[in-house]
Image (cartoon, rainbow, N blue to C red):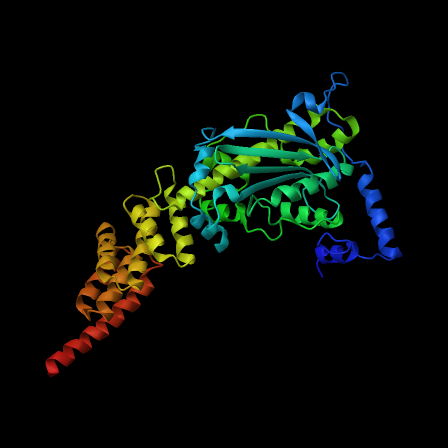
Amino acid sequence: MSTLDRLKRLTGGGDGTAVKEDERIGDLRRRIDAILSRKPDPSGPVRSLPPEGRRELGDLLPGKEERTPWGSFFSVEAVAGAGTFHGIRTLGELAGVNMERLSLLAGAPSLAGFTPRDGLFLDTETTGLSGGTGTVAFLVGAGWFDGKGFRTLQLFARDFGEERAVLSFLRDLAGDKKFLVTFNGKVFDLGILSTRFILNRFADPLISLPHLDLLHPSRRIFRHRLESCRLSSLETAILRFHREGDIPGWEIPQRYFDWLRRRDGRLVADIFEHNRLDILSMAALTIHFSRLLGEEAPGEEHHPGDCLAAARLFHDRRRLPEARAVLEGIVAGNGEAAGEAKRRLSLLHKRNARWDEAIRLWRGMVDENPCDLFAVEELAKYLEHRLKDFGQARNLVERALAGASLEARPALHRRLDRLGRKDGQKTLNESGT
């Protein structure tokens, strides 16, 4: 039984309705509430700030107090206009994202039936980076495209007692949306929020929503050229966006604990900005993926290797016409990606018995490099098995053998021997007739 299942049993289920509790369950709830209401005594130094000059959070951020039936919390709302650049992307491009292609990216077919306005971008800042039932999401950042611009709303629990109010507000906010976009949310953010909803005896409004987790396609598309697919790495390498003075993620939990002691807004103001930029980067990355996989041929802003990875994605999703279209755009170029695209495109042509196109690619590759083992073998197999032209196939292999590496020679020798036997048998048969 999973941790979430055990929590559901202990706290009365996940549907938000109360169940009859016996004395043991009631005692457990009182103990949980007592734990949540405590102020932590974390290890580690308090952030070094001058004792004088303490600043109220409201003086540093344009926020307000939100009131709910479950209490109040602090919120900050901001709007980035459609023409706002985030790296190489403008946020207004969200209006034109291809939802059908994003559904392929996410492996969630239902996304194709939605519009960009239906999406909720979600990112949390928590009291721990490893998750677990004791980890609290003290700041929940949400973003969405409203047709005119990109709106962000950040929900901040000023202490643990405000968590329930934050979750109730998030529940209502998510009720108006139809799908989620996160970065590593499947592993981290949604797991933590689900646990917190259960502990606070709320139904989880996020668990049933289709979900595009941008981390997984980022690894699939960009890992061929990036050592790390962290969001900060993608910002720099893909979006060409550079943060200045950003707070490192590992410092955020301690900053919040220090805030609980000091109540100095300077300790957490940077966290709000960090969270807001995370959400904007997710929006820009969504646009980038849509353009990469879009109907039009990938533009110059896309790395050829990324386009090749996109073609592999289409192929794996059994979208062969789209895979072929992307590959045809790549083969016009030069370099390693173009060579790999020619190989993959030729195999697609071969699979669909488009022999003229496949042969044209193989012959072109052999003309460029007579020792191209892939092209030589494919062309030799075609000559041997379909045309029964063993002599031409032998000439092709002999030319390749002359310049082949030691590793390639055994396979070429075996093919040459087989072709020699077949050619000899053919000659014998012809002379016998």
